[in-house]
Image: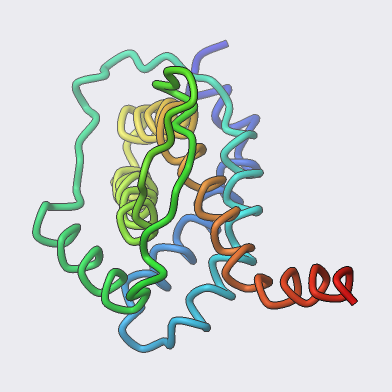
Amino acid sequence: MTDQQEAGNHKKQIIELLTVANEYCMFIEKAYDYSKEDILQYIHRISPLMYLKGSLIPEYKPENPEAYERYVTEEVWENIFNELRTKFGKDDEFWFIDEVSFQGDEITKGSMAEHLTDIYQDLKDLVFLYNKNTADAIINAIAECRHLYHTNWGYKTLRVQKNIHHLLYQQAIKDDYSDLDE
């Protein structure tokens, strides 16, 4: 069975991934219209779905890997990053353990804006390339998105999700601990 036939068999999974990716990208592109709280709530709700859909991306081996292209320019990336960084303010930075390059007990400072913009770039490139509607472009888009899920945006989605959970519920956590002191 060819990858093109295989893609037809996985069409529902791919369409669902594209739908979630497109929704995320459209929201991020209009982040300037939303408050920090709205952005946090949206990412809190969509990130588990993005992670799940990423885990279901089927494996393909592109026949023409040179057909893969990147579409998000450095200028677009910078604009989105700067907007998100401004929105998050002091809450942009967070600490995490980098699972990929973990060396003992070192922690890394991360940026929510950078993580979300990197996720945006990987998913927006998928949407653009898939919409070229050629067999090579579609197979390459899926294969590269799967690879990037394993090596980049899957990790970043989890890190952001954990940090947003803390930002949204830190007061409840503090209240629980203060109840223990009484």
